[in-house]
Image 1 (cartoon, rainbow, N blue to C red):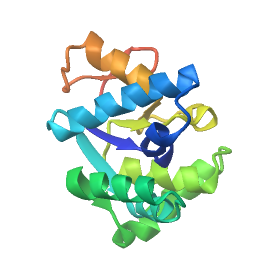
Image 2: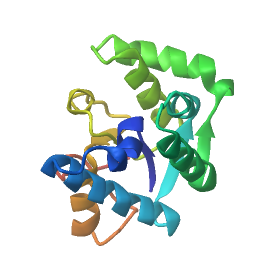
Image 3: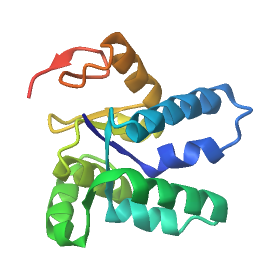
Length: 163
């Protein structure tokens, strides 16, 4: 099962953990990262993800995220996909999604990801038949309910989705 974590996910462990939602999302993201490390999940990354990370002012976060992506990314949507990313992102932007978010979603679709994980509530309202967008906590629930059967896909309401 291939997934894409947006920059919000990678940054969540560096946010203020005194807030319950942030703490719970962080635990879910760290769990997902462990499943990536163990090979249960495949990580896809993109040029926009690396670019956004490079702009981070927190050097420890920037280096940690860059190292994780470099070590565990199984597929990378680079500048060679630029025109395809732009074309697809224009369609996504037309639905009200912010440009940077649309670039991330387009990259995940082009990487043929099953799931796109984000902690951005506004972005998670975007729906498409091409990829399932979920909060990491919801994604963990799906994984646990299906005992890590990575051959099946489920939407946020936990309904099976056929390919």
